[in-house]
Image 1 (spheres, rainbow, N blue to C red):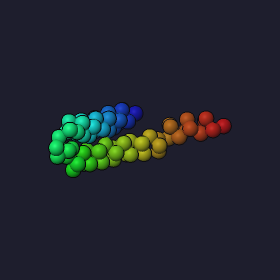
Image 2 (tube, helix red, strand yellow; image 1 turned 135 degrees about the vertical axis):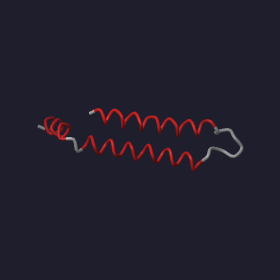
Image 3 (cartoon, rainbow, N blue to C red; image 1 turned 30 degrees about the vertical axis):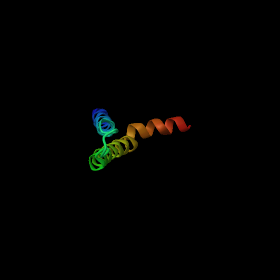
Image 4 (cartoon, rainbow, N blue to C red; image 1 turned 90 degrees about the vertical axis):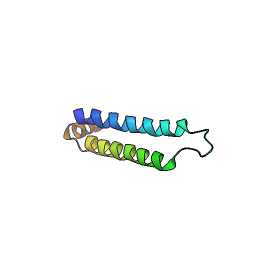
Length: 70
């Protein structure tokens, strides 16, 4: 479970960095740096997807889900 916490924290930090990059240059004449934003946001989404896949295929979690279905 420690990796799930680390992965969630990494995704959160990447989402916040993407938000900061957008907000910091929101009123700049050239606008935000879209390449930087897309790279950071894609990294955050990839980390988030990997973290969700680890959670979904965890046998302990699948046992809890099947217990609630009955």
